[in-house]
Length: 167
Image 1 (tube, rainbow, N blue to C red):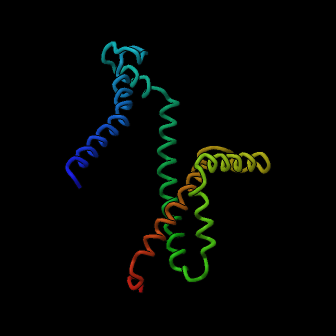
Image 2: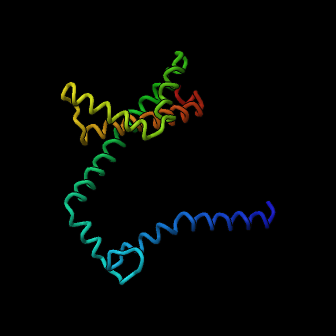
């Protein structure tokens, strides 16, 4: 690669990083502002962070987020690992249709998948009184979204290994 092209690519990369991260730096900077304005900086203050960490609703949401992330990740990885290994183990049994079925949540837009899950749970709650929207249904929805990604990744990695390793 020529030196001019390399310098140009490096300059483009730097401009791109500044373009992407400068707005975040501005938001972080103004989060320490003493007044409620993003137009001018009136001094350094931790006032907004004190209010943030004294708000029970936000702390409860933070705890729910941590529970949701941990639980859905552990379950999604465990189920996806088993599914990916099962797809690899029984790959000679004409299960290509199952792999195509697993690809559906991957290619479907996230918002469509999330809205369909929410509609499903609300309908179940209204008709049968089970699985009312809450932390449990969010864990189920996140796990059903994560499993195909893990399963396809595990399956692809196992296909790339030497088959004699399993014998």
